[in-house]
Amino acid sequence: RGSKTNQWCGQCPKCLFTYLILAPWIPEEELVQIFGKNLLTEASLHPIMQALLGETPDKPLECVGMRAESREARRLLLAQAQAQNQTPPLLLRA
Image (cartoon, rainbow, N blue to C red):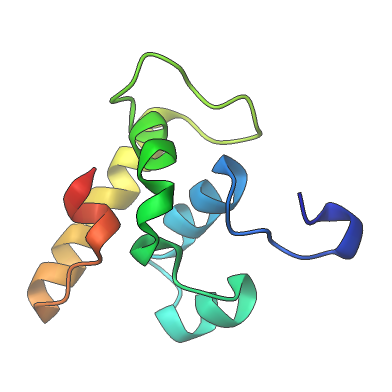
């Protein structure tokens, strides 16, 4: 959606997958600078997160990775978040 302006839209499967896969390795502040917000706190993205994780029958058509990659990134993020007592809502709901 933001390709014409060279920005991340923050609302599509490609944005959420990219954010999710980078989040275990890049500090939140840096990701927020790149994406404009913390996508893991956006309740509107819950259906997309479910699809990325394979909790729905359909996989997004955009360029996203495998469901196993999404699940592993979520697992890593949950472990990090629980250690800090700060679990983003989208990780809890998925």
